[in-house]
Image 1 (cartoon, one colour):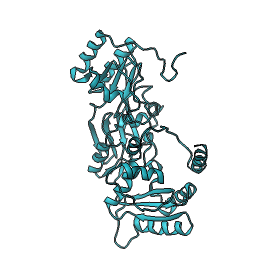
Image 2: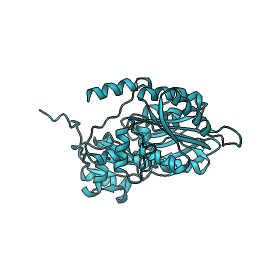
Image 3: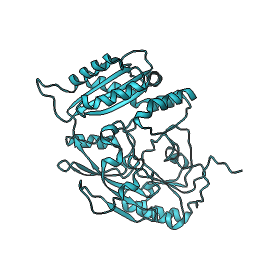
Image 4: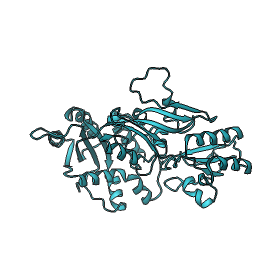
Length: 384
């Protein structure tokens, strides 16, 4: 019987003639042929999935991507597009029997335009997410997509997977942060939807087909991203809570208490927190409270703090007092400076690196309605 763990997909190997045609498009700098050089591209982030590729192709422009894709289309060669290769589910890793090409967008890493007045930024797909965040901040603007892998993941992959991130409650998934796209279609044609219009009722909004499609409908090469006013008043708190149901109730009441300024609300177990503290140097337990569940809660406003006026910290302090009285919050600490806030976020964002250091585990990526999370956790714990 065939091995069902490996996809049986008919592919054509990269022939010497095709290889020379690829070289004519991207040059020697755009090709990786030796096995050692391929390894970082064909191995997933956890190191648990190792695939193969006939060649790693690294184009430097949309035109080169178009020519490469058309060449593969004409010759029946399979393509695995890849951004920063930071995914935890193996979606950007070629399968072990892959004979085609791995298409890495890492060389396409230019910010093409920043429009602070129009609150938009046009970028290439290989731009690292953190670079885009910092570029927006340098113009007193804010790009809200934020992930634990933001120092190495690339915007093309973020959009192709419709990434959520820790600001999804307020700003939505990646598709909500995009005004326009440029995509190379499977036959090599370039679809240009690079519009920066906030109001665009000119017909079908095709860009949404490509976000979340994970490269199956085309290769995203450029994007026009939405920007927001930079946050000026931010408050981060770490809460020891009664249980997951309390977390849902806290979030529900936080929207009104913060005047719709909830940026992030992240539920973490004591087991995850301890795992991070064991494996990630420099991390500190914000509370040292031995409770099973914690909540990282952050509120932010683009309005600067004003003397004599109640800011985010004061509102958070009163809110936490009310939640303690209601029995939902058992203990809490509000970050008093940027270093304390950063420590809280490092704990949250280091769960994946800590789990890799901990040893083998089961990977999953699921979406559950907020109100259903407590029941889902309860069923999962009972089934374990």
